[in-house]
Structures are given as C-alpha cells and as structure tokens.
Length: 247
Ligand SMILES: [Zn+2]
Image (tube, rainbow, N blue to C red):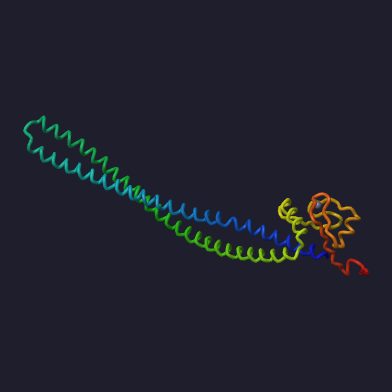
C-alpha cells in the first residue's frame, strides 16, 4: 500500500478518536458545575429551613412575652378592683379584664401554633440534613470520579496528539493539505473505505475500472461523489469458504 495512504488511514483513526475525546473533555466543566449545583441546592434548602426555624423561635418568644405582659395587666387590674369606689369603675375594670383575658387566650393559641410549626420545622430540618449528608457523599464521589476521569482523558488526548504529530511528520505536505481540507468539510472524515464497488461514506457506486485500480492502493483516488480519499482493505482469504487462488 502507498505509504502516505497507510499513514492517512492511521491518522484518520487518531484524529477521530482525538475529536471524540476533546468533545468529552469539553463537557467536564459543565458536568462538574451540575454536580456542584445539586450540592448547593441541598445546602440552600437546609439553610432556608434553619432560617425559618430561627424566625419562628423569635416569633414564639415575642408571643410568649405578649402573654406575660397581658398576665401582668390582668393582675394589676384585679388588684385595682379592690380599690375602686364606684360600681361604674368596678364594671369598667371588669370589662377591661375580660378583654385582656380574651387577648391572652388568643396569644396562647398563637404560641401553641408557633410551637407546632417549630416541631414540624425541626422534623423537616432533620430530614433535610439526612438528605444533605447523602447528597454530599454522592456529589463528593462524583466530583472525585470526574477529576480522575478528566485526568485520564487529558493524558490520553496528549498521547494521541503526540501520535498525531508523529504520523503527520511522515506524510507529504501536499497530501496533508488535501487531507485537512477534506476532513474539515466532512467533520473529520476525509477517508472512506471502498468496498464491493461502493464508497462506504456516501454509498455511491464506484466505476469497475476505477475500483480495480484503487484496489491496488498504489495511488490516491477520490470518490467522485463525496470527494473523500478512497482506500481499499483486502478481504482476508478464508481457506474454507473460498478456493485457494494463486496470488
Ligand atoms: Zn463517497
């Protein structure tokens, strides 16, 4: 086989693998970001619950203080009842105490509601924390794996890149110019196998005369339809299926 052609076939394999690897490597930042975002969401959720817990606690303390103040007012007014001289003033105090009692009952109900809300929040925080621990463990593992995978892929790409340089240095400049141009136009696929008189890239039929010539792989032929460089891989002769022919 023509030396250039042989190296081109190898170069295309390396180029395609390299292209695939680079696409894979490009995705690492996004995959890392997605994992970090998942962790952030779980942390934010717990932080939000804790904040609500702190707020509810403050609210409960405020309500308890309201109850306490109302209690003090009621006691004070009850004491004043012993000191009033008129029935009218007595009834006014009585009325005031009744209203304060009502307010106190309402405040006590709200304290109770706040306590229930706090308990619910505590349960949610415990669940959130357990979930967060799971997410932290899982995303930590994912990030570690991503780091390892990226290192392996990057090393592989560097190795292939060196291999590519080596291959290219062994191919004539004219051939490389053609190869690069066709590769650019066809997403890296500059070469196509010719098999059974058909270009395997664009499926066009190859004229029998051209096919029999290109089978010798002594010269570079181009597909008349897709313009890729054609190459032929000799079919291995199987002694069972085909009679052994001299050649
Ligand atoms: Zn073709």
